[in-house]
Image (tube, one colour):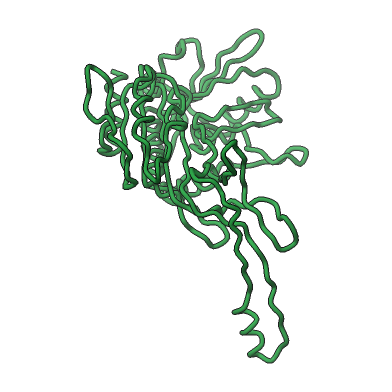
Length: 360
C-alpha cells in the first residue's frame, strides 16, 4: 500500500473555552502559550480528543470502551476492551499497566492553537438575573461578580491518521498477560477463524497466517468484525488483532466525516463547535502533519503560497481543499509541469477511492 497516512488541517472560529487554572478566586484564565511575536490561546489535545469522541458517539453510536482501576489508576480494561470491539481504543490508543500492554494512537492530534495573538482581553460578568429573582421572592441577595480572560479568534488543528496502525495491533506477551488473553477467548466463546474470515481482514498479508491460532470476533448480528491470532513462542507469545476490511474502511470514513463536517465543542454552556471554515487534506506515503505549519493567515486570509510549497513534498500522493475562508493568492489547482495540485473536495468517497486505487 503506497498511501500509509492521511492528514487534515482545519481552521475554525471559536472563543477560548478550554479554560485553565484560576488566576484568583473569581478570575478564570484561558490556556495560552507564548512565542516570539505574542501570546496565543489554545485547546489541549485531550480536550479535542474528548469532544471528537463525543461527536463520534452521537453520530455513529460508538460505544465507550470498558474501564477498570488498578491501584487507583483508571485505565481501559484489556483484553475485554480491544481494538476490534472498540474503535475508541483502536483510534485513540491506550495503556494497561496490569497486562503491560501499550497501544500508540494511530490518530495524532495537535493542539488547536490560535492563528491570531491574544490581546489580554478580559470580561466582567455577574449573576444579576438570579439576584433579581431571589429579591422578588423577598430574600436579600448580593451579586457574585467574576471575571474571565477571553479570546475570540481563528484556530488551527491537525489530525494525522496512520493507516498501517489503524485496525491492527501486535503484542508480545508472556505470563499473566497471555493468560488473561487466552482466558478472555474462552469466556467470550470465540470460534476458530476460517481462511475465508482471514481473507476479509485488514492487512492479513502482514502475518504468516498458518502459524497462528486464529479466532473470530463478531460484531452486531454475528457479522465478522475482526480476528485475534496467537502464535506460540518459547520466549514470548505473539498476539495479533486485525479488524475486517469493512470495519477498517468504516472507521476511516467516520473519522473523515467528523473532521470535515465538524465536532461538537460545548463547554460551560458555550457551543461554537469545531466547524471548519477551511480544510486541507492529504493522502501521504508517511503519516506526517505536513500542512500544520503551512496554514497561515495573511491579513485574515489563508496564505496560498505556503500551501503551494508543501505540495512539492514527496510524501504527498494527492491533496484536497475546501472552505469559505478567503485565500490570499492562488492555490495550485491545476498540474503545472508535472507538479502536484490541490483538488476541490468532492466528498469522502473520493478519498476512499484514492486509497483503494493505491492499494490495488
